[in-house]
Length: 244
Image 1 (cartoon, rainbow, N blue to C red):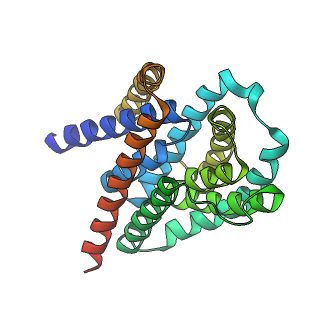
Image 2 (cartoon, helix red, strand yellow):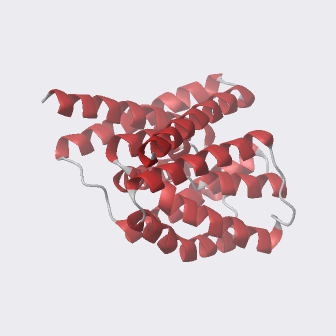
């Protein structure tokens, strides 16, 4: 009984934090939530819950911003992601847990560092850049629950503003996470756990909205990336420990 309550408390805390971040920045549920959920539930089930949660949060955010979505720009991104999502799902199922944890931790850590540095990648613009970013993002989203960094790098190279990025990231997150859920299925949780996820996610979305209204963009970005980097490093450390 104690272990069940411990699991629910940690699950609710991670979902609350991740959903608040997603509402604050347009992306981030996977970056912040995936490491904690992977450590709590295992790589496959944890990432599956990230995908399900990202569908719900992206849909809520998109309800108010869908008119700002650039459908013509997003088409090659989601098309390329649709091709690579099944590969990511296969890799997540096929690799042993220590290897998968090490890989997921490494992906999160490297991706966050790239975004922190504002790296510009030559050629990552236009239709060709969208196809490349979509393919990488779809694979990472399905295998690790972190499709956002590749999309962020593409947006940086295209010169998108924050106003451009948030609605398009929400549209992309909705489509690609739906594809990821179809490829892998939903996580195995009890009814009480699903209810907790729904409640904490709703509270997180509302809380993130309040924080967003009072927080400068640069400050929110530093907090989000710091949390994501810490989570990636912890996941990487656990994977390496299990390997050794």
